Image 1 (cartoon, rainbow, N blue to C red):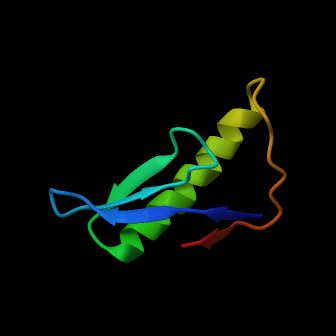
Image 2 (cartoon, rainbow, N blue to C red):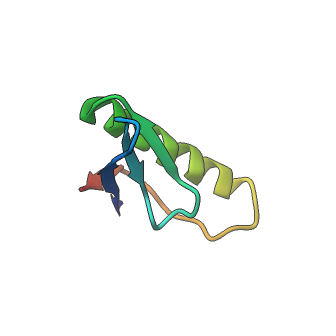
Length: 67
């Protein structure tokens, strides 16, 4: 499954990333590589949490991020 993410520069110099399809799924990093690793982990954790609750599910066989 592909998730669209948004990336923007924060005022403090950190890079911010958000996955709008998953409410509250956001993270930050010092550089692009770090923020991409962090958002992938945040998406995986969000999906895992949704499975444990009565929230709409996503079937993910492969995680692909579109920027």
